[in-house]
Image (cartoon, rainbow over the protein chains, first blue to last red):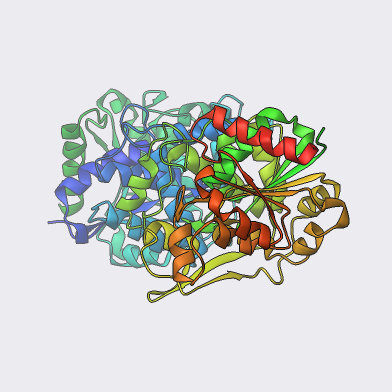
Length: 313
Length: 313
């Protein structure tokens, strides 16, 4: 039997696996630590895209077609903001805006992002703890020929088009991990690296001071499991493969595994990547070949179950 | 021919007459100074109910049935704010929220409320200048058995039910009138007191330092025209009559005229109030009996035309 599980998650891929885990684990056995390197201010509001993707997913409110926002949301406020000459390249639905309004107001009143996230998710009926990686600002910035672009500008406004020559996590060296992050990590029996972009989603989490050391704790050895976000040379979603190629990395699950070297024990890859198992083993990670594509909720639960089986075995 | 006109306005009644005036006067001949004593923060946003009522009216966007907000607006964000446990007694539509978001962001960036109001109204295609009475905070507060209530709490949350024993304009003694207010007043050939609540809508404007003195300028004598917001013992709209009674004032156009004594020269009253003409004349105001109810746009233009005829005569 597995004990307490901590999942490290970014956007859509992370939310999918977290949903599967949430179906198998009660609230006190699963904590989700979420990337905030994509956070940005729009129209004076604090927007946390990855936090919200996970929160809306667990609340059963997410728009699964787009991968962001709330199902059935409307865009009246955004259209009106456009009439006032505001930039509207970042899609913000009307119900989604309420999340950012409430978050921003509570932050201005002095609450930490961790406290705000806890409050918002409880009001949506979520029983599992969602924890932003840090209460301090960290900004994922991509160096491109168009200049240094914060993540959302690169990903949404520029549609991931400009070639990337470097990725930085601005502020990560001085930001402190959320106190709850360190607490749940100290109590964890199993850590799951969700199939999120290793550089843009989990990279910021791993860049925070003390996180790599905490993950290296003796108690966790053998209990750190990652899922590849790549099958063959393609990501399930998003610009992970493109950016890995531009940064001169091997565009395959091996390239991802290399980034988790020394941090993970087990690495789940797709059956069609079975040929890479030896290379992954050479990196010191135990390869496990299994179905990692999650199209249905049954897929998500099945993958989660397999992870818990490995972790509890 | 009338020259430059300044209209002093509050909410719905003011917006109606301002619409009529705007149909007759080009942008450089009409400036509207609007009450901000009702302004309040909701969900961290700066909401200016009277400014918006006039702005939406002149932009052709106002909801004429409710008297507030935008026609056809939706309330998705507000419903979601309610899910997060936020107070939702103040109705904020989705498109309306965009106004408050943009205003708040521009204010936080250092613009004055006057500058913000100018920018928002220009984007909505409004050619007449809308001027908040002040860039400094002034709060209309009503003393009731339930405690001191800011205007929106009294008017919206409490539905104007509690008896009122006093009305104060908190901050009015130190607030400065908007620089544009004083400039347009210095150039005015005609000042129109719109049929707004004398205590709750025009009272805060008149309470600002220097305003009464500027209105008393020799140049303006005979050129200050007010329209009664009451017919018989009833206001067209809102709690004006109720509050006048609770404050021990005469509930009629005479009670209103008394508040404008020394500030106005001409006072327009409804034909059914013709019997009050002598009492108004005794207060030093010239009574003019005319149709002051504005149900249609034609009514609004006709009343505006009559005012301009008096002012230009």
